[in-house]
Length: 88
Image 1 (tube, rainbow, N blue to C red):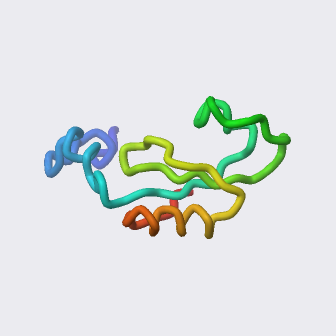
Image 2: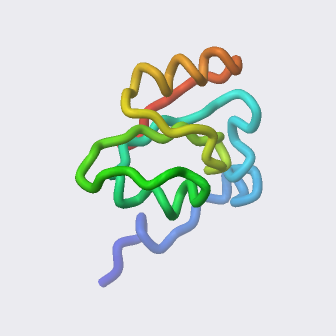
């Protein structure tokens, strides 16, 4: 027996349209660990392990900035006329 909800695709929006949802207007703030910093921001200096940081990303996932406070990430989004949303 299969669950129809998990095997049926929703034809209402294409994957391409979903990928461009919010382009240029929406950014998201995501809490990350300092250990994840090199993979997201290769040019960033080394940071002590075990720190909680906040990454601001464009809607398409492009990293914009990294900071040590959620408020600073949201303020940066606002200064760039982006609506910031949080992801968990």
